Length: 184
Image (tube, rainbow, N blue to C red; front, side, top):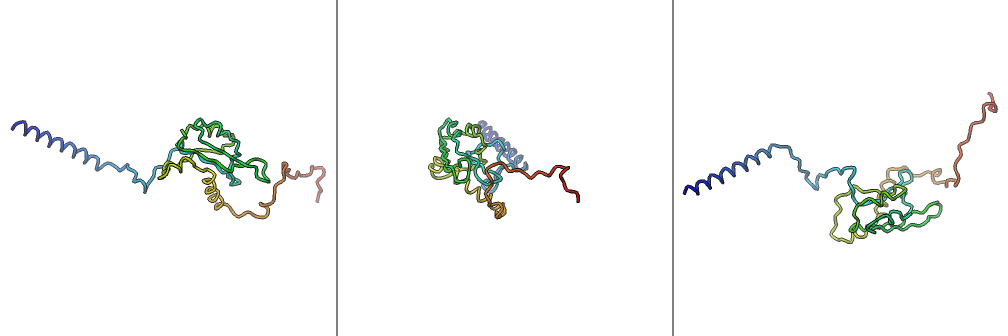
């Protein structure tokens, strides 16, 4: 009988200890993020999947399809294809596929790019019901969505903006030397 009372007393003390801890936590500030209604801001150094970068001036991709990222990738998960578009001096990317299921997020492709045309995204909640979505990610398609957003923030081009630029360097007109200026 004495052992049963000791066991009952020990259980009651354990219950009081648990209630004391619970009551102490009840008055502390809430630090839980109520996901999916709230999300945390990703740190600057977070590495999501890679993405192509737009030129902030022209709204076109910075990628020239040089394939250095494809060669630098140790996982062989990048396939790049490009074409020379008429009126441009350099190639432009036409197809950029990423097999994210093989990507190790090592950053070799980002470091190898001489034009800073690829970067790590800040997307961390990349989910799908199908693995095929990640084994064949089309980064050019994602870039087209960014181009639409970029175009919305820009005014409509004027006739002057649409005029072709000369191939050579543009020289500003120089003022006439002081001894040749007309005096009025």
